[in-house]
Amino acid sequence: MSHALDDASLSPFHKRLAILSSGGPFLDGYILSIIGVAMIQLTPELGLSANEQGLAGAAALIGIFFGAFLGGWLTDKFGRHLLFTIDLIALVACSVAQAFVTDVWWLIVLRLLIGIAVGADYPIATSLLAEFTPRQWRGKLLGAYVCMWFVGAAAAYVVGQFLLEVDGGWRWMLASAALPGLIIVLLRMGTPESPRWLAKVGRIEEANEVLAKVYGPGVTVADLAAENTERVGVGAMLRSGYGKRMAFVTLFWTCSIVPLFAVYAFGPAILEALDLGENLAHIGSAVITILFLVGCLVAVLLIDRMGRRPLIIHSFLWSGLALLALGLFPDASSGVIMALFAAYAVLIGGTQILQWVYPNELFPTEIRGSAVGLASSLSRIGAAIGTYLVPLALTGLGIGTTMIIAGVITLLGLVISIAWAPETRGLTLAESTALTTERTQAYRS
Image (cartoon, rainbow, N blue to C red; front, side, top):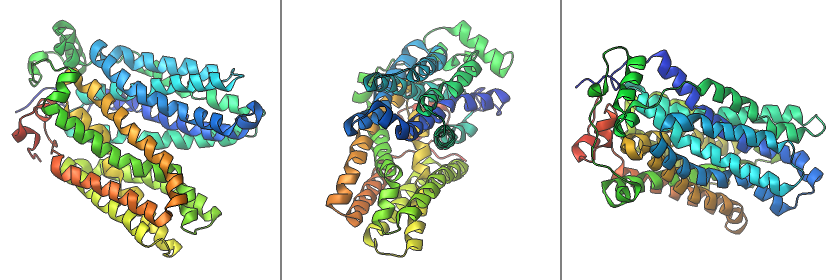
């Protein structure tokens, strides 16, 4: 059956919306990476202790944890359009304020607020993108969304390296996020509200106006595929069939990012522990970062050819085996070690892009933002714990056992995916969000 939104061709509006939505992960990658470079100057100037350095570095991550769920709840309650710009205005203001701090605790507070703004943008932007994008392109555009994190991180390192030569450059580094943030805010202005959300809250006339503007005269809410009309709150969601979906998304997301965050954050230390030497370890970690991006791009190309379920299963399987091989053969040659790390970085890409595809396809419009935000927040708990334990594991258990544990966690994601991962390729949002098993497991070419 044909539907006006789900079967529309990809228009300049959709492309522009995809680019503007990806501003969130770009800023996330930029903000989380620039602080590492800024610490080189910041630490001696403000006389930071080791604990203060850790808090300043982790504050944005803590903020993302709270912001993701808060942003999801707010976007379901007040709409996508308004918050699509407000959250980044807050980010711009706090970024500029960082340039004037004289006390580490003000810096920590500002980093926390910036993290809240970045975290809030994830469910806001992905909900809006999912609700406008035709089903043929939904997987690709939502999958490509995560790739911008690595672009933002790369930009931060370039800017940071340049500003290291400037006296007091750390202030400019931390404030520099305001420039791309301001550009994104200005470009986002005028983005229409989601007609699906407008229809859900009874603002039919406004929904019709948006549909006519984006899809042409004569397209109305009557052309939208009908979703579940029963009101579903977050509490009811967890007690219903959607609770199982939330468990699946949260668990596979956690199994995916715990090893990845550990490898990304401690890549040089892990590679040095594998006897690659300090210089080769830093070069290797830079190459692996690029390969994470390559893996995500490859997964974007495969998501509609393979389908969601085969992609996540194969991604967990082969990346998990690569980590196990690293753990079982820690004394292998440097070439073999780099090849296995590279294989992991590329092969895990499928699970990375599905972190944003599955939550947006498995939950109905009235709770989509809340569901994405909740899953993102819950998965960060495991990621934070895992990242914290990596240096302890390297010291206490050794590199071989540490890599085996990472491989086991990854393969646990495989088991969860085999048991619960649905196939949503080719489905409308109404079909993919329905709890009817036949619909969520349908396979369409």
